[in-house]
Image 1 (cartoon, one colour):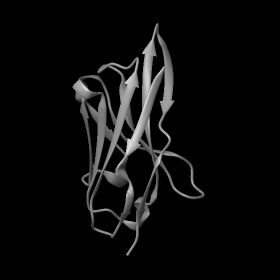
Image 2 (cartoon, rainbow, N blue to C red; image 1 turned 90 degrees about the vertical axis):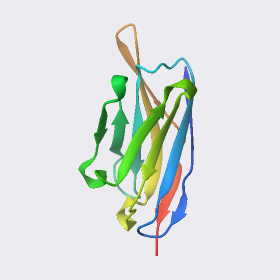
Image 3 (cartoon, one colour; image 1 turned 30 degrees about the horizontal axis):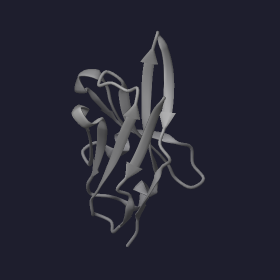
Image 4 (cartoon, rainbow, N blue to C red; image 1 turned 120 degrees about the vertical axis):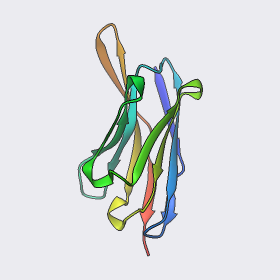
Length: 119
């Protein structure tokens, strides 16, 4: 089992910055993929950023150049630094982990943290 706890959401003006944190506990290792998804009101959940074994990253086109995902393997924590925030970044942000055990993927989600970008 893996538990994911997010923090760092809040209200920010357009152009501002926020940093989200996701602390993972349980049976998770640095080789397991972690990342962030978001879901805006009335829309489907979408991938924001992903970090996989070896530190490779992947970003949604809408956040490239503005968001940075990073990981502290010693503390099993993944971060999402969000700069130059836009109103359209408003959403609930969910931490995600994809844990492979015995060749099977197990997906875990955090409870979500609200990010609101408003003038």
